Image (tube, rainbow, N blue to C red; front, side, top):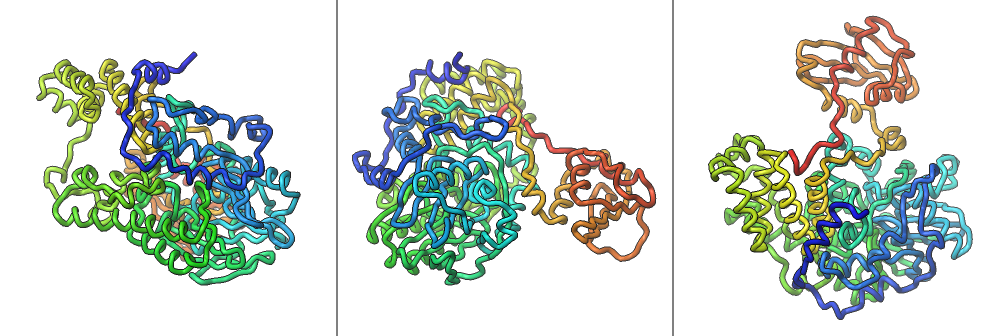
Length: 624
């Protein structure tokens, strides 16, 4: 049976207009994406140990046909390119596995084994990529992993390619930019629950793959659903210009902190004349602020580091590859690509700030800013992932924050209260619904959405408003060029019809927890304190973790959790000694802590933990 979302979208008989876009007759990207194809897996399904499918190469076979009316033709073209999967020769001695995940894995043949750049998101697809390389090119051990940056889709598959024991024995090097480990484990810790929920919209986690659902993520097909792992680096790159020889392969590094990731680096292979630009250059404009949530990135610095890469390596590079998408070939092509990609981020920054300084508000800037034609006509500057509209608001936020200086926004009403008042003053729900229907019938989906969102926020039980809003979202999804905007529109429609779905059933990676510093984990506890539960409480507990040679004093008083490391002698309610993993199981997952060695009040820790409230994993987004 077709899902409700598929049936409703098909029933709309959408005729999405062709959007202004580069030349569809230009097939250079297809040539680059198909060049050097060696082969792919015979079995399209990659399974977890329990038999669960974590990736299906055949899920995007529907993209082989022409663009349907339900998908922007420019996005369809991009998704076709991203769906090409298998092992590809990039240059002599260098191959990539693409289409097995949202990111690419790159294999460099050293003297004795493989040097792997970015081992994908999960162990299962990482192993599948390595197996394919060994099958097609001859079996080699992995002698080095290189993480280009601190996002999980570039290190999470590590244990699918190498064993910790081999790293510990010095058989495998793990190389990463300075600050990698801290940022890899910290970026999503404090607000991880909210980010994960929002990410289900961004990546279309619950959408069916197909012309009526998710077609890609804009920079890769989608994110694999396997086991995320992390092997800490054995060597950090500390400066631009630093060189290494790894298994006979010479490398030079360029640090690019604060660009696409807080810890990131490009690398150059001088003997091969090959440049890797990590995720600083992509087949799409990237996100300066990812919709799932993160700290705002610096578009000016991003452009600056791309310019530096061009100056350092542009004239010396015959091949360029990145962590997403497909390579580019030829010095002139590479130089042009770097220059125009840099200029796109610089234009985004400079014009957003110019308009901001002229007094324009974020929504006004977002609706007016557009790349110059010379930049906009390049496919790789199109907004398949990040967009000028969204990114311009991120630039505003980086400099000015969320406040637009209008005093009316100093003490805003809550959305539900505001919506009820607007609906009342507009003459009631029936009149608002009629106005929304008229806007929808006229094709004015943005205004229809504004009206219907107020109706649904004022009364989540208004099924007629929910259905019409879902249809407005679906119609917008059919026209947008951004893959993640499409996913978010369709996910909103799905929630309006079927209610909130629980986030994907994946607990925190054990590797992430193991490598998270204790102060960071205590910060996570601090943001779970419920002031209603803790308002009259005052508890002081010393925690001793012999396995890590750590001692922390934590206290909840006045509904605030504070802590200090290696505290001086002082009065406490209890002292507990246990392995850190045991404490975390109790503090964050509710496991039994009765086995801990305790002196003092044996109920103290239990009282403290009872004042913590776990995050809500499936909060509503469009049906508040």
